[in-house]
Length: 145
Image 1 (cartoon, rainbow, N blue to C red):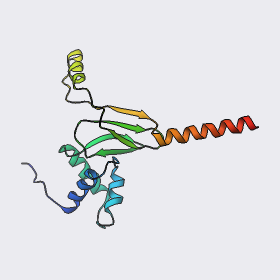
Image 2 (tube, helix red, strand yellow; image 1 turned 135 degrees about the vertical axis):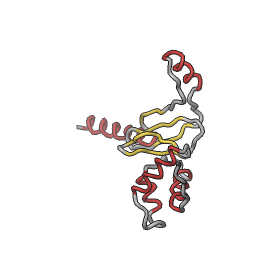
Image 3 (cartoon, rainbow, N blue to C red; image 1 turned 45 degrees about the horizontal axis):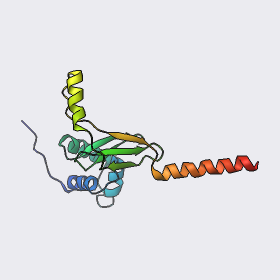
Image 4 (tube, one colour; image 1 turned 120 degrees about the horizontal axis):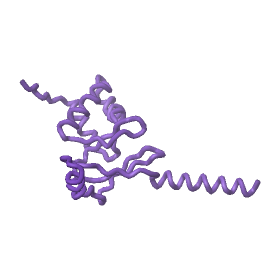
C-alpha cells in the first residue's frame, strides 16, 4: 500500500524557497532562509523534503559543488555553468542540451538514454577578473623589485 503524501506548510515553504530563487541553493541555504519563520525546522527535514521533491520531479539536482548538493527549481531543459573558484552555479538558458545526443548515445552504445545534463566549469566573470587583477598586481611587484 502506498503511503499518503501529507501537506505541511514547512514542506510547501521548502519547495517555494527552491523554486523562488535562481541561486541553485544547497539544503543548508534553504534551512538558513526558513529557520527564522520555522523555528522547529531541522536540517534533516530540509534534506528529506529535497530528496522527496527530486524523486517527484518537482526540482532537480545540479550536482555537488563545494561538497554540497545544489538544487534547481527550473525544470525546463537548460545548461549550467559552475565556477570552480567561488562555487556559484549559473543557468545558461540559451544553451540547450542537444536532444540528438541522447539518440546517438543510445544507438552507438545500445543504451536507453532518458536525458543528459550539460554543465560547463571554469571561472565566473567576477573570479576571472579578480584572478586577472591579482596576476597584474604580481607582475607589477616583480618588475619593481
